[in-house]
Image (cartoon, rainbow, N blue to C red; front, side, top):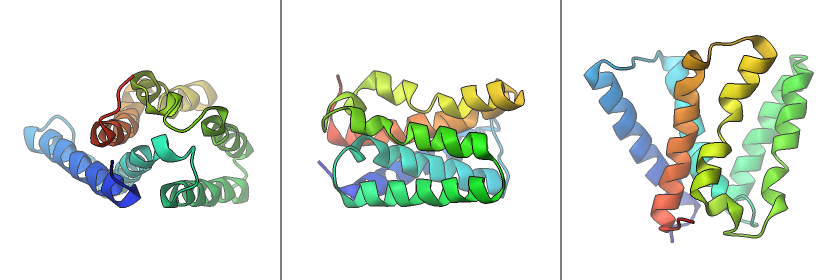
Length: 150
C-alpha cells in the first residue's frame, strides 16, 4: 500500500504511458496547456481516494483545490467556486477505504468534469472526454496500487 509519493508516481507513469500511446497512435494530440491540465487531473485523481484521511496526499489535494477555488473567485467565476467547494466536501461523507475506494466512485467522481461544463456553459461532451478520462485514469492507478476493488 503506497503512500502519496507512490500514488503520484504511479499516476504519472500510467498517465504518461496512456497519453504517449494515444499520441503515438494518432488518436489524440493535445497541445502543451492541455497536457498540463491532463497531467494535473491524473495526479489529483491518483490522490483522491485517500483524501478522506489526514495525510500528506490530502494536504496536497486540498491545497490545490484551495488555489483553484481562489483563482475562480478572483476571476469572478462564482459558479465554479461554489461547485468546487461543494464537491470538496464529498470525501468527508464516509470512512477511510470506504466509498472512495470503489470502482463506481472511480467512474462517478470525475464525471462533473464533463457534466458541469456541458450544463453550465454548453461545452461539447466530446471535447471534455479526455479530461474525464484523465481523472478516471489517475483514480484507477490509485485503486490498482492499493489492490482495493469493491
